[in-house]
Image 1: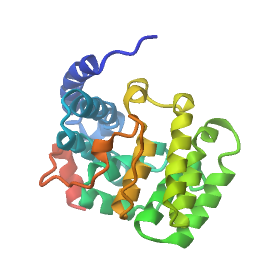
Image 2 (image 1 turned 60 degrees about the vertical axis):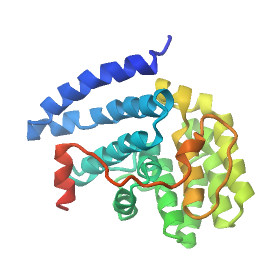
Image 3 (image 1 turned 120 degrees about the horizontal axis):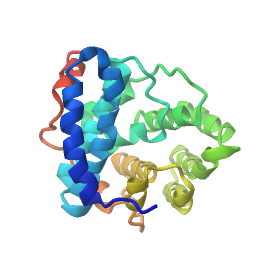
Image 4 (image 1 turned 90 degrees about the vertical axis):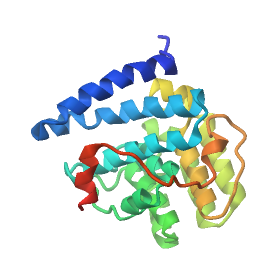
Length: 244
């Protein structure tokens, strides 16, 4: 089945955003609607980065993605570790406040999941906590023996590279991830343009001073330099998070 174009998705999401914002006015129903903003802002991100070539604008949509997930976790009390790419959005947004928020998340309903060990591994790298990283690498290895997670073993190679301060190993792991890109369970439109996990791992390397080069369009070079926006725009309901 042919995927709709980014332009069509963008146009559809403008109306979906209006509709979902209206539904969010009912506080009791927010749990049913808030995650709709993930797909909406993903479409906006793809359009701004790959059609408009506006890197900084695209980061604001990544920020919104990260804040929606934060709202889901902090306000609605749902687990934030259950989706693999959740922690990639704050990292790629360059919002230091949002990244700091994610670094403080600890409670996980499903602790021993591959997705949880990936997120906590990213936390460990950014906190320079190598003993914790080693523990989460072990968790990733145990949870990548079968099923969908076998397509993400490149994460383990890259995390070993961070553990060993080995830049070439980090790069090798990213290329492993990109080799299995088409077998990964990704949103169809995103799949045409970006591998969020591979790009976030490359970005983390940049954040700690390793300005690695990845020769693959699924890791957009324009997203790798760390350039925080002067101001990030959000939704009104994000104010509940700002009060925390």
